[in-house]
Image 1: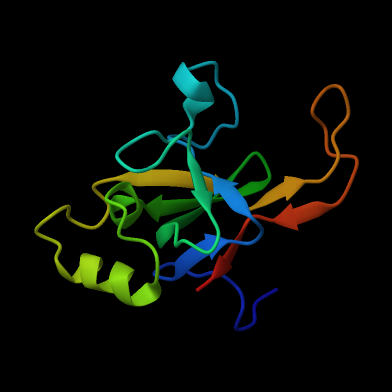
Image 2: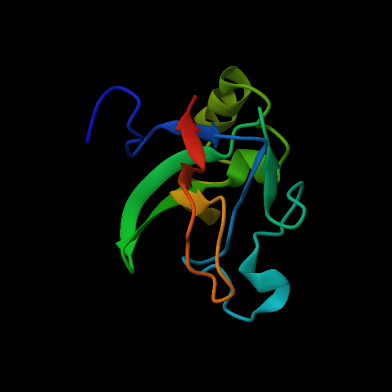
Length: 131
């Protein structure tokens, strides 16, 4: 555990693979509208495609044995997430949306294979990496 690649509070993060799903709460499917996928501004169906930046990590939470990243979504919501320099310029202008005003949540890992009840029977794969 640890190391220079470990995601910490304050890090900018992007999808580990082709895309990542961002949610409005720390639940995968709570039966709410769009299965609680983050839908706002330039974000459709909670999806942030690589190499775009998801946002800045605000907190790291452990819920039900799973790691969840709480992320500031303001730059992505405004379409200002194509690079670290663009995202950092956006964060420097905190008069638009103060840090933490628009939060999304990303589970730390996903599974490449699940059984009929949704239990991981395959390999846990990271969802995010540091920029």
